[in-house]
Image (cartoon, rainbow, N blue to C red; front, side, top):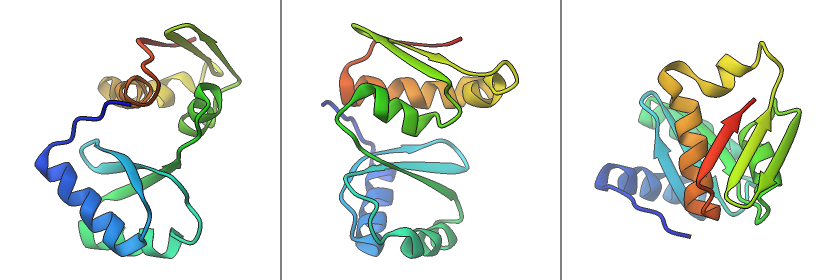
Length: 128
């Protein structure tokens, strides 16, 4: 698992860990939203709301699972089917959910790709 973190992201992680007491594995700053990958989500939700107010950003928390399919399902709850073939993940969604999963300017898709690459060394992600 290879994760590269810049100084701003490191500050977000430090603040999030201090307030929620959760162990953060990765953090992605997606403009107006922060996504944290944590080892456990038990008891952190009241603290997450407080952190959102302090940072003035929406926060999404994903609990890490050491299974590519299950982790991808947590990243994309709208997925109908997830297929993993070697270094490729194919995510099947409904036609009208596809724009939401891909996101504006492919932001959501890039976040999914980056997390799967960092956590599981997946090279390619396709939304079908």
